[in-house]
Length: 231
Image (cartoon, rainbow, N blue to C red):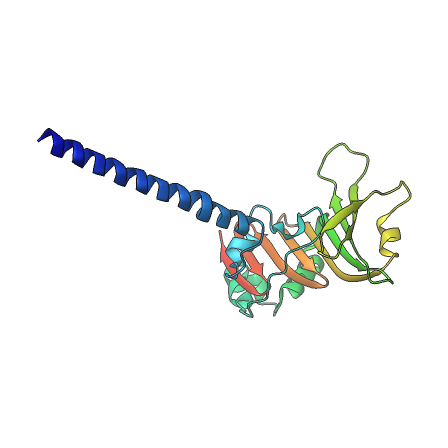
């Protein structure tokens, strides 16, 4: 009888050990690397929703890389802008504002800007010899620093990996821009309107990539024109 109990205990122990090992392998070798890939932008099979992208704490991590290389998220083609705008700001939707760009222009002209803060700027440059450069500009983060902007300059190797280029005192954003042709420009900014509503947006060239408009508690969030209204 004791031999049978011992045998059953040993079998149970082996099963539990095997299951524990399998769980460790799953979390350490499958789930955790997958999570890391997602965080670093390596997994892009699923199109992020406007809720996942535009309502994140940092409206888009796409502009936060020090190399100034923003991730490119394809436009899904879904257009729920007008429907979502009517839900969040029917008084503005009644003005036939049909695109995110038109909305921002309307807010600037009709409500007026109390303050505008440019948080991040990226410029993708191509030099006359074909070499690639990146200018990464970080806006003042309410510190007591005398410099209102932090400017970083990068060169890219054949694998598109960045290497920072030291700047001298005389190097300005304008001077760096003059060294090549701007192939792509990205900007992230925050607007405080005169009625105390707010807008946060990220622009790629002259197109709004994603934005949030907080209309006194009702929040319109968009990735391109794929939008939703929430509170």
